[in-house]
Image 1: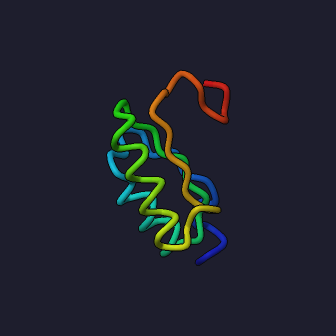
Image 2: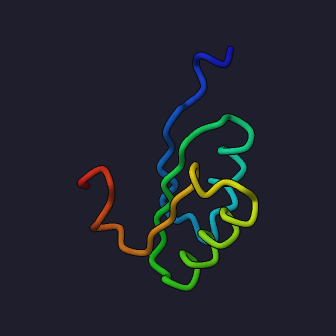
Length: 70
């Protein structure tokens, strides 16, 4: 039942965002990935852009500055 699918996902320890991109494609979820590595964060964002998911997947390297104010 699609109505029970998550609409927002926080992917802690996302690395280069593979799980986030998969969930964005499969479920249409908006995903925020968090990784400690700025290099992984840049790669995750580049891959999301290349796959047409830049509006659905957003990755950052500083977990203390999230959109959720955590």
